[in-house]
Length: 435
Image (cartoon, rainbow, N blue to C red; front, side, top):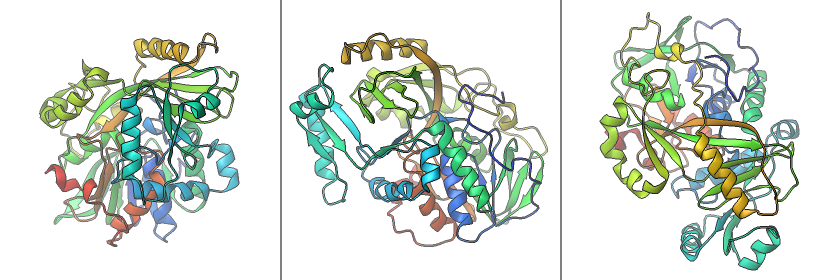
């Protein structure tokens, strides 16, 4: 499947000849891979980014578009705080094209338990420099005069939003101008490893020599890594989203409570999703790693639905090969774009929640709906660090919060790939924590 429901713009220079040798190969054309390739190229390295399908055609164009510090795990927070000025530092032309807007993000509370949870996070974030603060019921009523049911909120004025479907291709174009070599429709079948170190990658169009590889392949990372004995308990969950037709501006940024999330887009429409409802697909890898996910499923039991994985076209599908040779056609070529259908029950639920929250807005019209497969880890934190093979850096399992933090993660990965000590404490993201 080469086209998707999201259909981001095609990346420039996709038909450039495959180079024989580069300094670094980045595997995966999502937001993490693109920002990382750009960061490394700007440090004077020759960088090739390989994407099996199209740039940002999977989760990087299907997320909510939130660029948030608010509510971050405290291990991620320093990186995210640094990511905000990186987004702000993009050229005015880029920010205009991607619909970048720094209007804040708000977490709404329907009860005292939610207020307490937000207050706990705010207390833990003290001293970090983030500008988050609590809002009273009266302040909420000023923000949402036609709304119903919220008693307060946590807000962060410096948080921002952007349009994912256009953001990553536009940023990729800027990276290409700076010299990054992009190649779409070029799957990496295997890594070329000799004497315990990287010497290149085998692609469907030939071998590329390099001594550093960044694995940023999202939901497909674990399938590629296991070919070389690197096992990670990475699985995918489906999240459904829809956009409305342009409508009256009732809120000019993004907000959510424990059930409903919404964001205004640059064309006057809104993106809506459920806050926590997810479809967890059970395939061979899910059976293998199920024990590791029990705490996460138990904590989110009301919002997690267990489903049998599809027989094909999915990283953890029942017929997906787990072993192949570099000369063979790989699973990455059999599924160029992971494009799941949205859950129709979720779409109806979102409409019902919106009607309850904003009874004066009228019936919502769905213009477009889609779903994304979120690559997740048992502790909902990514892997960002060196792998057990010299020259391999793994950055995957962003667990639904990779879009906004991508520039800061890219800076950290640039340090790792060049054997520099990072300014961040990355121990919580180590590959070894699952070994």
